[in-house]
Every structure is written in C-alpha cells, then in structure tokens.
Amino acid sequence: MTMMTAKEYEESLRKLRLQVYMFGERIENVVDHPIIRPSMNAVAKTYELAHSPEHEDLMTAVSHITGKKINRFTHIHQNVGDLVKKSKMGRLLGRETGCCFQRCVGMDTLNALSIVTYNIDSKYGTAYYPRFLKYLEYIQENDLMVDGAMTDPKGHRGLAPHQQPDPDAFLRVVEERKDGIVVRGAKAHQTGAVNSHEVVVMPTLSMRKEDADYAVSFALPSDAEGITYIMGRQSCDTRKLEGGTMDQGNILFGGHEALVVFDNVFVPWDRVFMFREVDFSGQLVETFAAYHRQSYACKVGVGDVLIGAAQTIAEYNGADKASHIRDKIVEMNHLNETLYCGCIACASEGHKEPSGTYCVNILLANVHKHNVTRFPFELSRLAQDIAGGLMVTLPSEKDLRSPDTGRWIRKYFKANPDVPAENRMRILRLIENLTLGTAAVGYLTESIHGAGSPQAQRIMISRRVNLAEKQRAAKKLCGIED
Image (cartoon, one colour):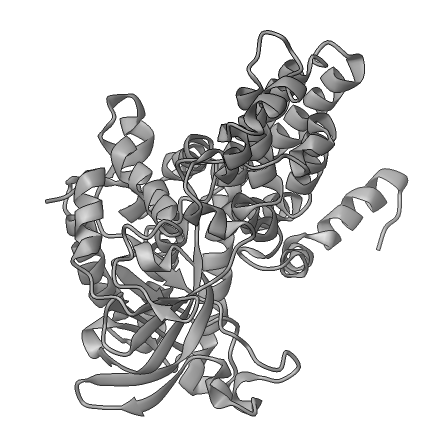
C-alpha cells in the first residue's frame, strides 16, 4: 500500500492506542469525539484529494527512493517545481477545509531532516542519513501522517535549557542504553497530534555544548508507551457538543492542538536522527522553520474562504453595491494575493542542498511568514466590518428551531428578501468561526506564532539580507569610492 484513502486513514486511527485527555477525563474514542472529529475530517481531505484526478498533480508525487506514486505530504522536494506545487497544494487545502489541515508540519520535518542528517554524516561520519531514508520509505509506503514536534514548553525564557529550574522544561535525553535512549519532557501546541501515526521530535532552538542532552531528534509511533496527549481548549469548542451544526460556523472541518508529554519514553537507535550534535541543532531549527514558514500558503486558502464569506454576507445584507463595500473586498483580495506572491516567490527561488533536497529561499520564506503575521488580521477586520454586529449577537440555532421564537428570528433577521434568514445566519457564523471561534486558532493566532513568532522572522530577515551589497549599489551610483 502506498496511498491511503480517506476511509482507510480513518480506520488506521481507530487501531491506535493513544493516551488522550480532555476536560480532565480520558478519551477512549478519539476518532468519533465531537470536538476532535472535525480535525480528523480536515486531515482526511489530504487523503481524499490525492485520489482525485483533478488534483493529482498537486497532491501526489513520485518517490525519489522507490519510484512509486506517493502522497505529496510524504515527499522530499526534488526540484523547484515540487516547492511551487507545495505552495499551491496548501492554498487548495486551506480553501477546501477553511482551517488547518495539520499535515504540513510533518512534511516540513521530513524535508528538514533529509538535509540536516546528511550534513551531520558528512562532518562526523555518522549514519543518520541512511537511517532516515529507511524511516522515510516506511512513512511513504504506509502513507502515514507525521506530527513534527519542535516547540518545548521552554520554562523561564531568559535561561538556557541546562539552566532551567525544572530540567524537563525542554525535552531531553535522560538515559543512554545499548539499544537506544530514554527521553523525558514535553512538546506544546502540537497541531493535529492525535490525528497522527508518528511523532518526530526536533530541538526547539540552537544549543550550546552544555545543552547536549537537549540536542536530540527522533521518531516514535504516536501511541508509544509513555506518551500522553492533553487536548488544548479553543474558543467556542463546546458548541460541537450542543447538537445541530449552524452555531459551529464551519460544519465540516476544524483543527486541534495538544500538549504531548514524554514520560521516560524509550527510543531505539534506528529511530534516532540527532544525538548531542549541538552544532547542528540550530541548522535543523532554521531549515524546518523556513519550510514551515512557506507552508503558510494555507492561510491564503483560508483567506479565500473569508473573502467569499464577506462577499456573500454583503449580498445577503443588501449592501454589496455600496462603493465602500466593494473597495473593502478589493483590499481583502489585494492582501490575500500578496500573501500568495510570497509563498510562490520563496518556492520559485529555491535551491538544491548537498543531500539533493530542494530548500526554499530562506529570506523570502521569512518575509512571506512575516506578512502572514499581519495580513490575516486585517482581512478579519474587514470581514467583520462588512458583516456587521449581528455576527456576535446572533441567537442560537436552537432559538431558530424553537416554535416559540423561531418565527421572530426568521422575521427580524431577514434582510435581502430573496435570502432566508437561516442562510444569513449561517454565513455570519462562518465569519465568526474564522475570525473569533475555533478556526481563528489556525487562521489568526497560528498566523502570529506558528513557525515562530514575528520577532523570529525579523531576526532571520536581518541575518539573510545583504546590506553591504545594497550599500555598494547606492555608493556606486553617487560616486562614493571606499
């Protein structure tokens, strides 16, 4: 088997024995839990579209290891075309799901490791790269979803990992054995964690020699003994428990994040990809971050949905012909397409690494992501402006269905005579979901902090921009000779 169907993916999750907690209680059936199920549906879309002839070119690739057709989310980029298709795939899936579809982080992790394990071997004569390729073939052959786990809880932000009052604030090696290592710690904000078959851990920052125990990368089955998942809260998440669908906004898809705890977990050597090579920890972080900042092409797809919702509510309100509304829609499209320019540019300017893997232009990837930290918020502001205050004062779906109150809601919340009040309420709930509710986690908060905070991108931009060359060009044109 090389590519799973959406149904096969769902069934594969049912076979996992995950330790998952939410609201202080153990969840036995993760797949069908009403709060988690929409996030699984979003991942399933990545499997479904891979079997669609219309989307085959974007959603699939040919493995450079086996020559087999595989899901692009398990592929190692072999040329600039692969990088461009990755951006286009992200926009497509963002538009199809209206949320985070959770598989990008695993793809970016695999590509980063394909570069850095090769580089470690080249310097130290280790065997990480062939070990990684064997693991990658397993992932591709079984079409597995990988949770790329980078972000540690971090503890006191002013202290290095080895200086922390609690040494487990960063995930670390606590024991070395002949057959492997034992690790302890946690990874926070893990998108799609309980929808994953595998978890691949990376260091969260550049390490010094004193932090050697923290410079570790490895892979484990997501249900390995000693791993516990604690689900994070999202705004309006319990609406999924109320029955009905309208108040959820996006009635099909969603996302989730979790704290993943590693309590003295054993990792065999054949799944270890970095072990105390502190001088490569920063390279792995920066390479992964560059790939993942490109991945925010998904926000363009979600932006497509938000723009469509804004135009729709303008028509339902009877305000779509107003010049200021038209101007706001144009501005939303301008901002969204500017984001698209960034993700396509960093892909088009990609380059070949010594391992043969193609990497994005790191400067442009950081510029793109820095725009993502800003533009979705302006898009959301404009959408809320167009929608009006009813977006946050609507009665519930149960009130709409009630024989006592429904007739008043249908009477007083109808605007355009050709549009039922329920349709108007549904599109308003979608805008609420995208800009304030559960989807806002993946669209707004993730736009700021996902793949690193805005300051992280500014640091990388300062490192990558060639100021000396810009100065040389300026001095040449005005006759200054150094």
